[in-house]
Length: 53
Image 1 (cartoon, rainbow, N blue to C red):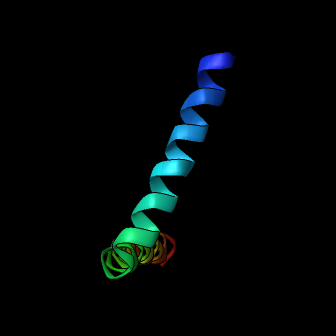
Image 2: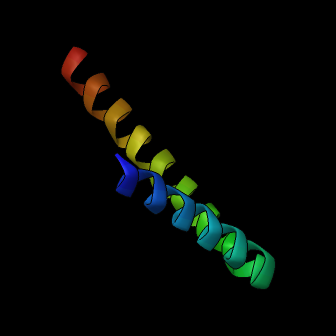
């Protein structure tokens, strides 16, 4: 349990450091993740639409 807490703090610190030192790259990374999520959701919707039609 202790290791998980330490890893969480390290991850949060890394994200904060990355956000403050390279904000444009951090924004691009977030946009990339969001595009991937939206693309996946769109593909799932297309799949279920085809199955249910």
